[in-house]
Image 1 (cartoon, rainbow, N blue to C red):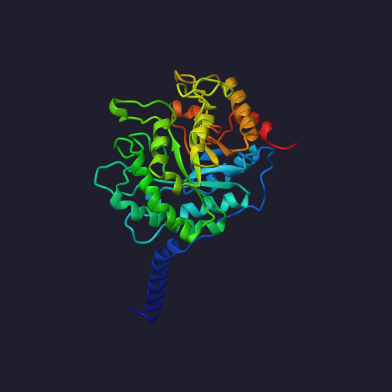
Image 2: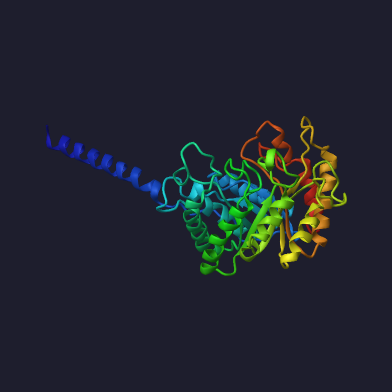
Length: 367
């Protein structure tokens, strides 16, 4: 082998070695997000919001486009799900904030306020084959550690509202167990002081219950939102709650239908407010609401009704002094589900704004 051949082989080896090192290092280097210039949402309705599903997407272009549309529609609020299972998928040691960072940074840059919904249990923190909604008492401390870490990281970036669990009065959302408001109160009693110790200004929202009567034998499928609320507050939950989250779905009734515990309608929120007023003045956040216009679902309404009723509900919410925000389920998804769930969307699964988007934009934005 000649000297020239040895030099060429040496150079090639060095290049291959450098390429290998690059392949190892580059994925670990955080790439800064590509943020637009700072802006604010042009809206006449300061309580208007939409429920987004962005934190698990990981596609910055999709996240940016969705939040552009949220701002263009005139929605100054979003509720976004930040699953514990995404932040700590493998163990209690360390966090993966990458996907969350993108959503928080892009929302902040557009002047959109975020209510962070924190649930979903990682596999290592629950029994094998169990539901990712199953949070047992022996995992409360690990969950609280996650919430505290989330608040420590994101409150300085403007995330001042956290929502603890989703519809815990449903067996499905309570991890396959019968709903247990006393256990939920115990969870809040563990979590509340820990969060307040790191940031006393963060608003901790409890509740977010499925509206309607009890279902199943001994209410094992759903405990009515009325009974769950009464028992939660009686168990001392009021001491560990800053605000109450309500799911104010309209069903097949217009938003001005009279409030009635026997009916699922938008003004049911007024009955919830009256119920909890015995324990103090708790601000209310409607964290889910809306109507479905899927043409093949028996509980849906027409697209024209949905447009008209949603706009009317935003008007009503703006006039309620005790309500902090009203969030519609849901804005968009990365892909169509091809089920009745698509009937909740404001932006279709292919990214195309539906007619309701433009009508709500006309209602919400200041001209």
